Length: 369
Length: 77
Image (cartoon, rainbow over all chains, first blue to last red; front, side):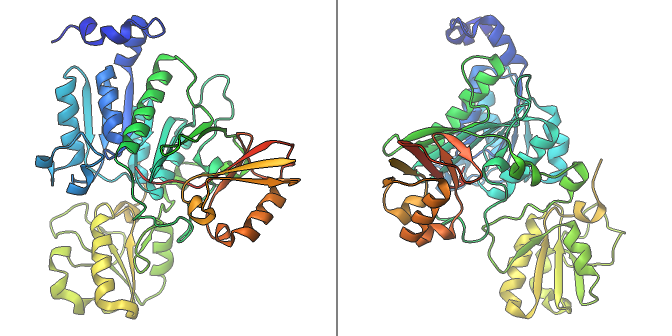
């Protein structure tokens, strides 16, 4: 066990932070959603600063094309779970902190279970679907959200849903953009490119905002968004008022949140993720077939609806079993069914309508309370 | 009466400039109409508008020497 005073002496020496601030950091619980370009630097600085409990959620693995910006990972980590490797690296940096890892893609039900365990959530994700999911869960749970996003040479940092005394109308991401962009409304979604140092800077600013919120120093970007261009340092801090448009598009309660579809805007156009509501609509048509693509031994087993089992590992040999016009695929989390949907779409083209159930079995079994 | 418009993100792909000046624009609706006429591509993409660093949802009158920011959503991380 190292000497706490020695480890943190350079920040305890800051009169604005001091021992009281350090104690606040040590007792803080922070959840970092996404351990990629933004998550890596945020995790490093939060661990370094002595944030006592850090949660990391990410379902991705380290790839070679991540390494120009995700500097927590090494070439030898390629193919391994980001959450697991990130936890190992920051535990080596600061063994005194508690780290919890979640090797899954965040889904609605899990957000409601996980977020209440933490004081602040950091949105370090890389897609609109998860960003809206995180925003809505935080608004519903009145959980402070530190938001960061990047594109090419530019970044955005903001603090949403900060429900503290004196902030009766906390703004959220839907006050900026009430609904997610449709197909074609954001350019070059997958191929926009990003300069490696950009998420390094923006993720570090997210850690900075988090530390300011925990310790109560400075002026955190509450109800504001910072825009920063690294090419010319053009920047602006925009005030965001919470308004009708933002409020009207938030789910009203936990039940409506659990049934909400957060559909990736950049999906291949032929593959459609659907949620529980659309599932039951489609099943009213007798030409709809529900297919479990999980392996045969996986649980929970489904009793609520008629379906057939074709594990994704045996998909190629069983194309003849997809006899109906509309196919709805499901798995545990919605990830394998999306892969299966891509394979089937390639096979059947326009001849069949192929759908993937977004949240997996929970969309069939109903919300988990 | 001068209005300065700052474009963020990939909006600059459409405008080919990060800053633009316009004269005698009475309000944000007129500003958008002028911009759409000059850069039809702006009609295809999503962005939000801030007047003097404050987000606006509805048509807003513009005073002299106003700075406008047009900001698209970013998803990258």
